[in-house]
Length: 226
Image (cartoon, rainbow, N blue to C red; front, side, top):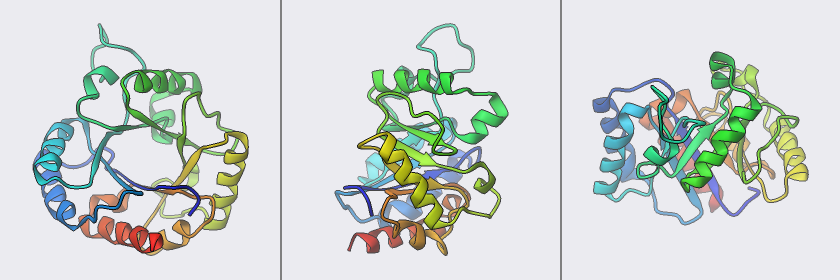
């Protein structure tokens, strides 16, 4: 493992009611070990964030709460947007520039860079998704997830070796960068990715919806730490 921390980030996308979200926290939270260099993050739908945050705090679980996005705008007349200043009391991290945002909502590199600025102003960690080594990484970003478009939600992940090579190229361009891999991660392939020298963790989509599957991935990360 490349960096001082291993990150395992759950991206639920547009899934789970509040009741289902709380069931997930009840199943996952008590089974997480408190390890200083293992960062476990769950990114629920906006409607679930506040209740998930409360459940994590009440249970005192070693689980960070994140958002799947935030607005490029500050507070103001932006109907339907969730600003960083509104989210800052609820989340520690925000996933920005996911390929589904780029594809479905026409997000550009410039928009992602503005979202990074808003996140930093609110002391929210920006986790920026990049699709290749040529995707620009905005200023003040030290955490990215390499997510090749063809691997997201398809069940056809990139190879661990290729992901590690992409991560190495990114780190050569952006020193101090931590690079996660995302795209069709499962308990069956997680170990191979986590063993790669240049990868600092995983961004988990579909497999994160099932608490048992997610816990298996976390367990693999714990074992990788030794």
